[in-house]
Each structure stands twice: as structure tokens, then as C-alpha cells.
Length: 105
Image (cartoon, rainbow, N blue to C red):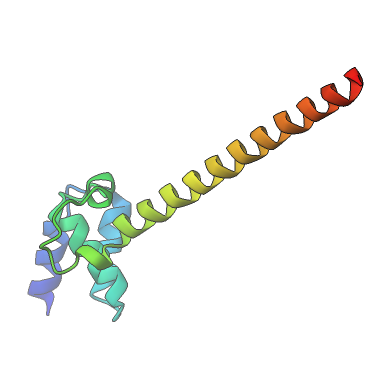
């Protein structure tokens, strides 16, 4: 067992402390979600931004990549906020135009 622990520590020794902790904690618990996340990081040289931009649909983990899913959720949230802002801005302009039309009468 100690051989495995040493191997794991050496495998991520050049990574940030956060990545090291995350990687080593996978082997302590039984969290499948964390294991998928670490495998995605491992595939992308421990770069979360690269894992979020995964473009390998043939990968068996593609649909469950937590970094990619989080990015998609953020993008959807921002696009919804933009649509709401555009809608309210357009509605505000319509109300101003109606007020201006009433003032002319």
C-alpha cells in the first residue's frame, strides 16, 4: 500500500497544493464524481480550463465531466441573464415611447 501512496504523491508532486490534495483524497473515499473530475484533470495536464473546454466526445467521461458541465451551466445562466436584460431594456424603451406618445396628445 505504501508503494501506491508514494507513487501517487510523486505523480502530482509538481502540481498545485489544491490539485495534490484533490488527487490524493480520491483514494481515501469512494466518490465517483471526484474520481471523474480528477481523471478529466489528469487528461488535461491538471488544467481546469482545459478540462472545461473538453472537445473529445468519444471519451466515455465526456457527458459526466464536471468541469465541462459547470462551464455549460455558467454559459446558460449568463445567456439567460442577457436575454432578460435585453427584454427589460426593450420593454423600458417601449414604455418610454408610450409615455412620449401620451405627452404629445
